[in-house]
Length: 250
Image (tube, rainbow, N blue to C red; front, side):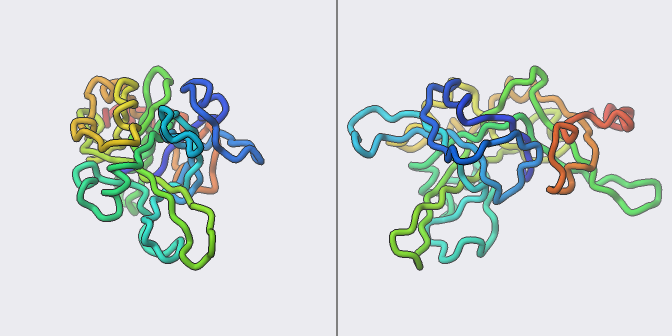
């Protein structure tokens, strides 16, 4: 599962990098977020047709969405579970995700993600210890996601609320030591097929690429990330005071 992550992606620079259209609200700057939590607005990459020229090729677009997919039939925003993750093995069957899996797939950029392990503390109450998973070369990850556009049924001509879920799969290799699930990172050569808005996704796209995940490093970090009130680069810095214990995990 992926319930917290870090991202330094900026919509304008991301649009240039991906040759995409920045459709985010420019009224406020998007700052780096080292403690992204469910229901937070997050950056996503989609590929859609131009409404005024639907016969033209689709283009990549940077959009901000609520992290936690809201199914179209939801009667009231905020009611029910927060669907921030979607299991790859049930995407095609789960009512909340199957339509999105067919026609509304996205990428969610991130620098890395957090998971926790419950560890005994010398006879004291067990503590939740956070770990940060990230590419060793500092590159950005693009996670597979699905999204929806929900309109409040109680408001006439309501503006759509865009929301998304991050797709998860069974963890591979050394990542299993931290958690049995991980977000599905997609290599660049799979983006076009995943984002294509006019047809469903080949199930093979849901198979993780081992080479990509072998490059992921695991750092034990300080419990600062346990509170959503904390947000800064220090959250992803290794806990050097517990370095020996960190190495024992790997």
